[in-house]
Image (tube, rainbow, N blue to C red; front, side, top):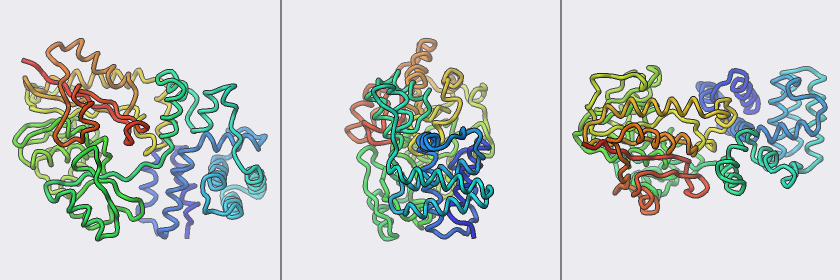
Length: 447
């Protein structure tokens, strides 16, 4: 039977060698796996931790190896990263176990000489006791890159955008394990009822003070394995993400467009706010992603969502002047959710936002035409990049004088956020708001 360590090795290898997305590769490997619960948890900890701290781990390897990283076998490199992660970040695993299990994997995925190489590197790292970071005063960018495991170019962007102190605060938050957040399905139950039902199933949860439908769950049992989840009483969704639908405030009977809808969390939230009355036309660029939207709607007992494949960059004439409300959660760099998806920070496209910003501008300019006069639109992203946020909005307003920013405050949003939403837009930051990074702006089409 495969161990959690071996499963983690295969997942990390595939993610890096095939440029995959960690959460998708992990889910594919775990589907149908016979790993015991403890080994599955170990695999998840290793893949998340190694991906989160990869640059730091590579820095340690370079410190004790004369061989360049590119010359090390991909499997052996991942084994070294996993071993060093266990030594420095997993207190409950003895150093001897971290070393010995890594050597076993090296023998299986390499040869005797390579297992000796792994053994030597890990013993040196273990004997050192702690990671010796670069001197912060000599090179602050290099220090931040190694200390918080972010690529150098991305660290420079953080410093240029936010200054050194704020950059360090945000980088540190990207390495914090986020809470499990969920949205109560108000079509079926109240927040208080769901919290009680979850407690009966062994999961402790408490109310969010940011949204009136949000709950925060303690880690442990998988909430998606509960009867409450299967019965459609709640959905796993970040608190920040919930704000997009709440700020749009769709009403029962309205026609609402959600034009970059997959995987469908916000789409379902819109339907819940509309009391499952009206029409939601949901679309995504890829047809295969819409199955999740439909399955989610079925689980939640929602019938007003009509999902279809559509390119948000291509004009659809039958949609012109059709919508009372539009939700436009555009593709973005994802800088606000790195703590949930650490592999984002290593993607090549983060070195240049220009192409992404152009796509966002074109989507907004095209889809705004679908709004009725006096209709309202939410433009949102899960990034903290000003270029992708107010930069896109300001460019749009310059070309479309019949649109203006209006208040995004809502009766469903907590006071500490609502005061900022009054101005019509908000950027949420993990370090100052305690939730995922997110941007929301509400636009209105004037007569």
